[in-house]
Length: 60
Image (cartoon, rainbow, N blue to C red; front, side, top):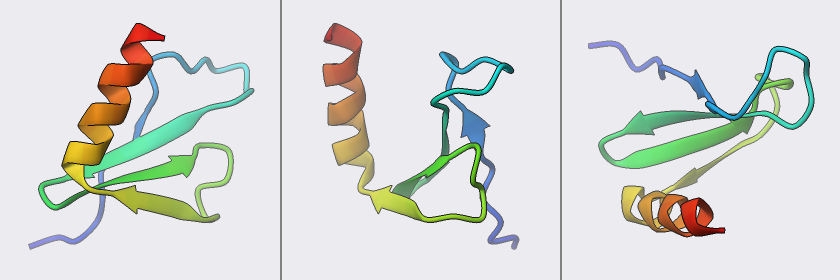
């Protein structure tokens, strides 16, 4: 079984640079990183925390 994460760029990101994030969802965690610095730091949150954040962000 592969442990590699499948990263996805935000649907609000463009190919012109700027502030872009990528996420990699896993059953036990959601990983978030800067798409311009894929070797840089990433942070990990519980799926429930990510869902709460995404729901809040959708209303902002």
